[in-house]
Length: 578
Image (cartoon, rainbow, N blue to C red; front, top):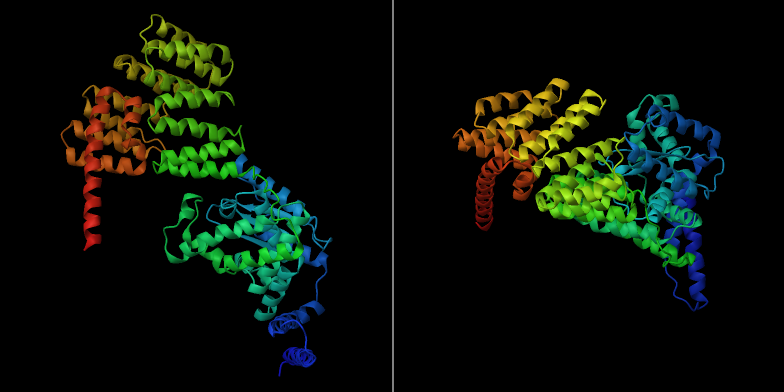
């Protein structure tokens, strides 16, 4: 028989004898086998780990192993795609370092890395203190205390030697040396992503929470994140449509991987609550705001915007701005989504509020367009009252403000508007791409004012300055279509295929087809446009951005698409009823 098992059975027998003696002497409190069974299980686990304890690697050796794995996995040379990712990585490192400062093994230096993928809903620890946090998991966290508890969990896997012992077990099982494991590359990291036994995961929860509390975080951080997982778990297990999709851009399979590699969330929560009671920690300690949550809320808002769920998008942007009042991407999104919702008046209010946190090109453009659409009679005066005290002519935003003022003057048919515009465009020494963009902006104002000849001339000038800009060809195509020159419009459309503009291209094709009597093809084109970007089903947005002639055609296409969707829904309900 296995020597470790014999030792464990002997210990259990001694315990049973003690239990019998206590019962013979009339103990006052109830005596059960549960503590002894737990002792037996723990003894068995420790006995299994005993050979590894006897061959324990030094902290220096373990650190070298972890650094090698991290380097081979590309973690040490990782660069982040933008400033948001850099900020996320910095916050993870800051919280992680604060928690790791209370670990027992002082010879381990911890390093924290961001796996910058929304589809990675997990975190893992490599031997030697190399901790990897997934962006997808971060999207589910609502407080810094929750982040501290999760990072504490991963730190505990290192501090309690779970990670290095896991590697030693795998080496023994596969009968290969460390160099052989290094050559496995990516599969080696999968060993640590796969999770541990239930007992080790619960131990990491408990120890990790202890580390987080020692760093000053609320003990309820771990409980709160488990409560959230507890809500998601049955939904993820039962079906693919989960409320988590409203919060994070994560796949169901990614969440399933997390839940498979950890004990049930309800069990983990109960264990943490028991630990809080046993340690006498204050469960009412306030949770800290997670500053980087503004980034994830803005990400979620952008996803909702792309689905046409503008109200939900704006709610998340408002929440993001409460956390980070000067977060530029959230302000830009707030103004843009308001405009896309078709509410020109609210766009003006949103743009003015955003101006208090920074004047950008986009905010000036939408402020002017919002005023022109919502209050055309007073738009010029209102814009001037905002523009004059705020703009700085030397900046790009200041130049844009002056260009928008000239556009509003043109829309108001004010004498001298074109002269002012020509003065502005002639005085700029911007790169050709920027000059073309300024000309396209003025051409938009000419187009909306019904001055198609002027708009076409301006776009032709933009094409001469910077012929690579495909947006210029699309603008010319809309003008030619309005003028009844559908063949010319189609030719221009085929030349101008800007990136990320599939919906606009399909909508333009639909208008051209409708105007040439090809209504079935136009409906199919428009169906694809509305599927690619739901904004094409917003009548007010179309009216605010396109000529009255084009908006009339698009309104007919919207009606046809609405009828098609209604019929499709009725047929679906009929099949369900059967």
